[in-house]
Amino acid sequence: MKNRTLITGGAGFIGSHLVDRLVSDGYAVVGIDDLSSGKQANLPDQFDLRVMDIRDPEVRDVIAEVRPGFVFHLAAQSIVRRSYKQPLETFQTNIMGTANLLEAVKSVDGK
Image (cartoon, rainbow, N blue to C red; front, side, top):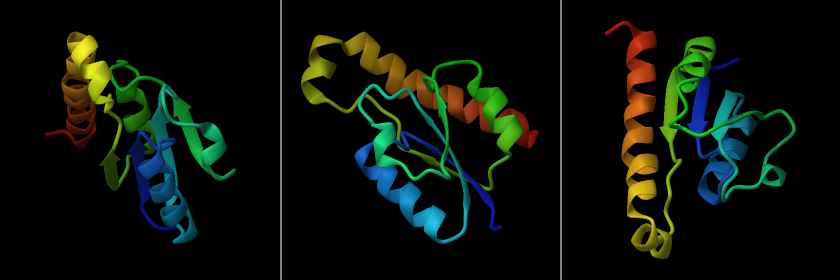
């Protein structure tokens, strides 16, 4: 089996297509998605989906368990209208969620 791969936003439109490709290429794929806009029905059966928000401190536990060789970060609040109506929520998801993911990867990598 090739490297383990982690995809945030794996149940979304782009993420689910990436999951399909990586799984078909033999990668062990694990995903994080809160299913706020993605759909679990988009995913193959062999996809290991962890339903959680990327801001969740438990993201660190998933990264430590999976120890991915690759991380594709596709999770975001990407709806423009919502970003105008809920700018703080958008900031927290897109910026703080990314920071949480990066810190999780950094802590596992030991750097």
